[in-house]
Image (cartoon, rainbow, N blue to C red; front, top):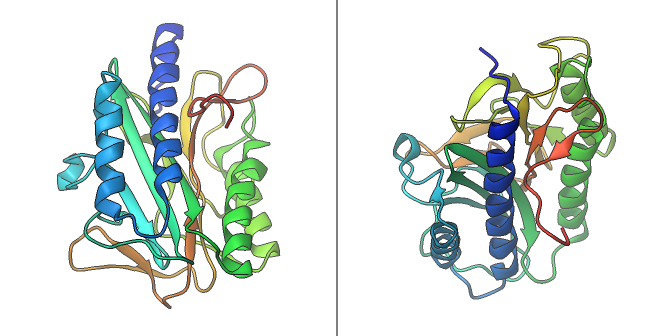
Amino acid sequence: MIIIKNGHEIEAMRQAGKITAAARALAGEMVKPGVSTKQIDKAVHDFIVSQGAKPSFLNYGGFPASACISVNSTVIHGIPGNYVLKEGDIVSVDVGAYYKGFHGDCAATFPCGAISAEAQKLIEVTKQSFFEGLRYVTRGHRVSDISHAIQTYVESNGFSVVRSFVGHGVGAQLHEDPEVPNYGAPGRGPRLIPGMVIAIEPMVTAGTYDVRVLKDGWTTVTADGKLSAHYENTVLITDGEPEILTVTEGL
């Protein structure tokens, strides 16, 4: 069931979204050679708590950290630990904050120092694919119109879109209906109406779209070991242009 948010709930989601986006920005600033993923996770946790919120991911389904930190060929759900970032890595950080009864959810991939031209293009195409999909986040379009726009843009740039994981609704629960795939034919799925809130999150790979989950039950990597990038925002459907809720000043 798709839950339509009222004005009070939307305002709470704006606040949750700002905290979440600020945590993402903080993590991105920390992506430098010599920093461990555990250090980034601690900073994200401490910041979210300092804002009177709770990390959405901590203990969610048993996940042991406040941020998913996925390096290079890890697509999503990387568990922070003792890995020390090095020059040339690309680092995807996915964060969520729960505030006043509602969640924000966002992600981005950051370069660690100087990276390869292919890695830079992968990051840029992944981010832009979100905005290609965002063009269809208006009243009357269907969910798969977003999906199709993302897939078309990504594949036109020589990359692949992950099929096994998708975007989703967001609200009082971190994952709500509807599912928002990043691939598929247009004109399908639920019709978008004002008050819906969805997380659009392209997960893009440099090689095959096939992925595998490691023995820890979380860490999801590309099947061929090639690079992956991730970009996500929480978005409100309105009567006019869509509103990105996971924003901070200057971003």
